[in-house]
Length: 348
Image (tube, rainbow, N blue to C red; front, side, top):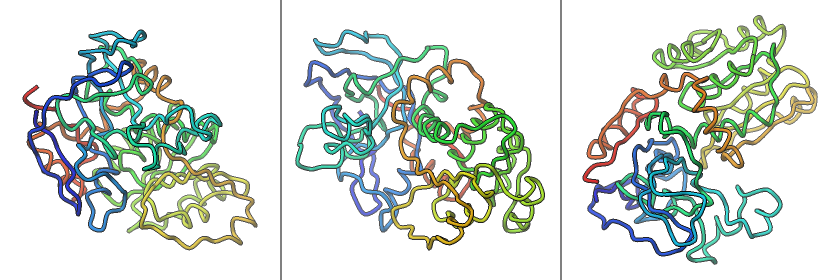
């Protein structure tokens, strides 16, 4: 089967790999239907890398597919089920997992536990290919009625669902979102569905600003041409209730834009970013800052959201390409010409 393999130092190669064979009784074999190119994949392929990954691993952690084979101890899933996948569920038995923090799973980040669960598509083989083996504790059923290019958005949407739950947005709240990439647009969709009164999205790309409006933004701002702080001050009577950082280095801007007593979600993730922090302003405003990482405990809800059709998720998918054109998809994203690129496997 054709596979996109990370070879280190920014190199992704298309290679033939053998179809995987089940090794454990609790695993299933999934025929990949669709897989998204994630911002994390772009970070992995930067030089120097802005996110770690295992050399030799098949990339692809945002995906959906159909179960074609199950292990002998698999009872909750059957051949033919359509599933979405939590690519980093944790091992379930270490101290961090038992404390409800699978995102900090000791085995997920340790080389001392060979063969133990680690992030699918980053530290071991993922879905930028035709077939992938996944443990059942990573799986969630989803209706076959959800198109595969939409179901492939489950992982980033689950991350946003987890993040939004931290602030408990109320109808009438004013929200500012910095960045209208896929994550910023998912936040826009979620806050709109939650009843936010004003959603101000800041984005330099004209195309992405247009999509933000279609996803529910009430005001879109190009920070290169407009004074974002003045816009937010005017539209929110002094500051936003909630500000989302969906880029990486803009935490200080969030601190300036949020009202006293307001909340910030720092979601943008870049291992190379080291912003200076306005500690005095945080203290004076009594601001709450939430770090948000993966979609822990959010995938079941994410499946229900997708099945409901309440979010305009089709607006996010700018391109759908075969695996043989994955480098074209990566370049579209690097040049800002794409939003979410969905890849379909070949020779399966």
